[in-house]
Amino acid sequence: MAVISVVNTAHFDFGALNQLEKSLERLGVSRPMLVTDRGLVAAGAADKVRAAAGARPIAAVYDDTLSNPDEASVLAALVIYREAGCDGLVALGGGSPMDLAKAVALLATHEGPLERFGASVRGAKFIGKVAPIVAIPTTSGTGSEVSVGAVVILENGRKETIVSPHLIPPVALCDPELTLGLPSLLTAATGMDAVTHCIEAILAPSVNPPLEAIGYDGVERAVANGWLYRAVADGSDRDARWHMMMASLEGALAFAKGLGAVHALSHASGRLPGLRLHHGTLNAMFLPPVLRFSEGSAPEKYARLKRCFGVAASADLADAVADLNAKLGIPERLSGLGVTGDRVPDIVKYALTDLAHLTAVKKPDADQYEALVAEIL
Image 1 (cartoon, rainbow, N blue to C red):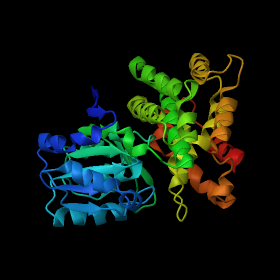
Image 2: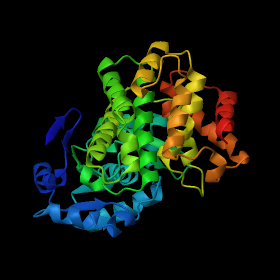
Image 3: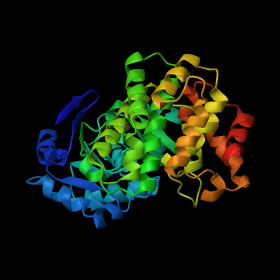
């Protein structure tokens, strides 16, 4: 089993879940709260966590996590955490349960509201040590188990990114066993989330060769080496699940370098009331038009990314991504997800003020963002 200590300690391999009891002990957590969703409870994953906790039994459970968690959910979970006398959290799931757990860990140790900690108001300076978290991913996409951020829809309507090194879970248990049998479309969408993280991190203009190298490896692993398609085609492929969980972890390590307009648009679209659009699906859909828009901004990086995709130097990178999306079954049009034309100004408004916009390799203005949305509407 690999033990990877970069930003935290990640136990990575089949069977990593068995490190839970020891991890809780090392963190001094005796009454952990489990944050997950009802689907994982029904699938028996929560029972596996309870068993792995051993002598550090789960003291409370919050399983009402929504796709794109909101502030009301965080506050509801916080009440349960406090009433049960919990002293730490176990986050089981994709990005949503992990982000919700991070927000609970923050408010368990800091006075709210969450709005004051948001990146849009430079709230990181108010964040100190939070309640300890053990993160256990069940999808291969967000990489929240090793990231500095939590994304929550606030009461003010903004889908806010809260960023601080204190929000990195001190321990991640990356067990590909928990992703076996994940539905093909969810595997595709979360896999493209990881690929998008790697690509946008590479293209972000800040200078950080080590993180860029991690991003390139993630893209090559998922795409040129074929592990993403294999995971989608056969949910029981253990090798594919291992490699996609690694690509997901790599994407999150890389995006400490920055993201870009794809994430600005997906965050702005993911907050639309009444839709609860999947973040990874949005990233996959917005990636081709944003790559076309940014063409020429980083030619050497585009050339290397083509090699990571396994396409010719003369190929169009945006077309290569679009072809991959089609092969994986990613939806082509936002209208098919329920997005209507009257929502576009709202998407543009929030994209322009999103944290990811600030680190884009080429920053769209309002008209350009509108055109990017229209391209796939």
